[in-house]
Length: 82
Image 1 (spheres, rainbow, N blue to C red):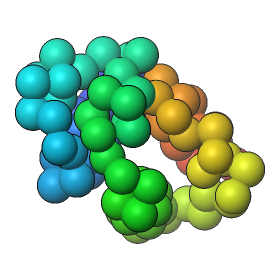
Image 2: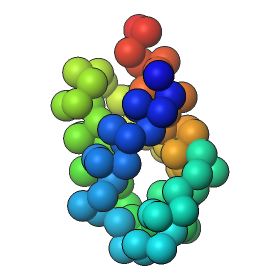
Image 3: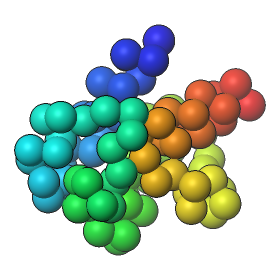
């Protein structure tokens, strides 16, 4: 389940990353801004893409907590369970 969601998240992130090397070495601790160099405007696009993919709504509090791959996967799992 986590591997599947991780692959889906990677596909969502791919268009927005600026650091290909960090993307290739992506782990649960990979930070979207510091490691992948995704700017804050594109991070909003990532959230919108995640919402569309999983038919969920990510509120501002959750969006602010979405800093790493693990954060994103935890929030997605929580929102899907609703």
